[in-house]
Image 1 (cartoon, rainbow, N blue to C red):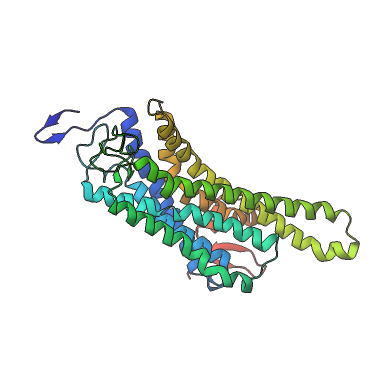
Image 2: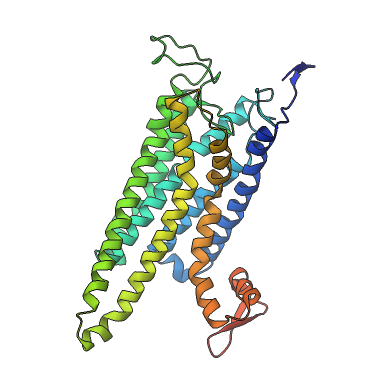
Length: 349
């Protein structure tokens, strides 16, 4: 880039443009989808009484802030930052974006808690009364941890240009930090940023990923064991337990899809930052572009998983009319049930 009237021209390479534009698309899409989940849950008093839906509500609320921060993409990065397309901000806007992105660690933590919820209710048979006793911890831990690490990062001046958006990063990007430079801090800001990335975000994220994986495995084995036992049930037991087994199978599939949405969103970023830390000379351009797409995309993926049971239900009732099925999902609030129980047309609320 060259200086001209105290400004720096924008790089116009395809890579720089893609890294700037793609998060706008996936981020704003996730905002809309998370907002739709919030609307769907909040308007239904029956759903608000269930912990499952309240957890989804909390997950979607945090994801709105996350998606918006990612959707801003390179705009908040200080103007004149090298190799960044559409960097229009200041250090203050960069810090603000970094704050909300760091606080977004609450989002994957809620994903893990959702997996634990599935495990407790299906494998261990917990009821709403038992879950109520631990509810404050399920909701409180992600928020407290996210906000505490975000505030600490502001105090430590960790939020700087991180190539795609502002987050924990050294300034300049080439500085080492005191730990790797014989105790001498050679960074203007973000001293030892690589360490705080793992302490504040990727370390907890790996714990969350492993926790969700273990919960899913235990859930799968529990339902699988019940499926194997079903072959030996008496007729009376089969009549009594079949409905419960089918419900557990549906829950297992839904939990699996939420877990996959979580992995698609976060694993590319985890791999990217790990490679950057291990070897600064490795070309991570392709992985960076993938992360620019998947990082902000979790709200959309969660929405697709959320509407999946409803889609399957309506699709069975109306296999010949896909447009009507989509209409039923999108305009649920405006649909009227016929005496048969089928929702078939849009009416005024």
